[in-house]
Image 1 (cartoon, helix red, strand yellow):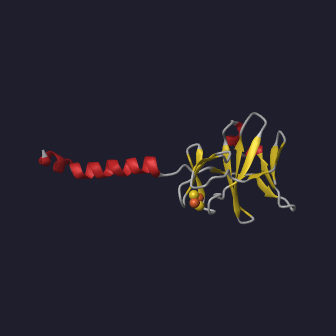
Image 2 (cartoon, helix red, strand yellow):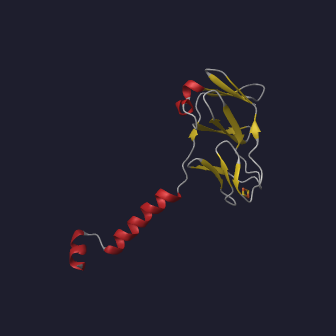
Image 3 (spheres, protein in one colour):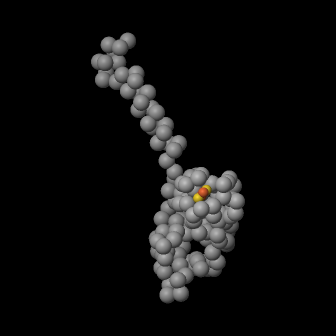
Length: 144
Ligand code: FES
């Protein structure tokens, strides 16, 4: 049997290693939230997001990430046909970085999890993500 494996250039060990790498890649890499486009920082410090530039927000549950807003990251989530929630992507435990994993945010420091809209699901964090004021029109959302 090893002759067959060697003649194809694939050993059993090599195949298992390759399979494990693919499996690790599928199940451990966090899904990155879509980076928002059409973002404008207003003089007031508010953040304006053009909906036309962010088609992912057409669907309820759609989320975009806005990084480097005065040193912080924000997520904008469509929560219903006309409602949006903006949350500060700073873990409420000790300020760890949050990344999207499926339909949750997960802290990279101690693994607390939050819903996309910011509700705390798993500790050690015990409070929801900080929400930011949101005003929405048919064409844009203003955060702050
Ligand atoms: S800093 Fe996020 S869980 Fe500790």
